[in-house]
Image 1 (cartoon, one colour):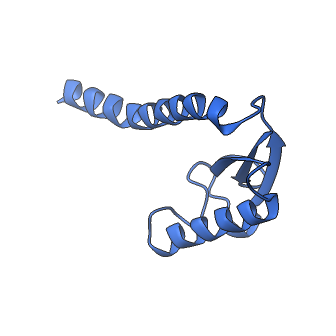
Image 2 (cartoon, helix red, strand yellow):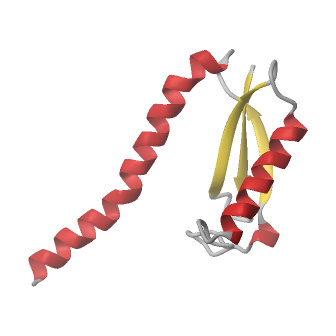
Length: 107
């Protein structure tokens, strides 16, 4: 069974970061600890902010939540997770590109 663990901001539940793992291969407590460590490292290096980028909730209000996915194995999940990640990256850059285009039209 593949589970999804997410670090969410409180109280709005915006996803800061998430990961998928197969319960046959990993222990949930270890995955939560690893995700927490990655987030701390990314904050320390300036890769991400120490507040939610959407609602500005500080790290003291962030929490972790785990839920089952529809996948039975990582082999099944990986292609779909990769496509979802690519789509998120594409959408994350769209406002910036659209903003530049709007700015260019105004000038």
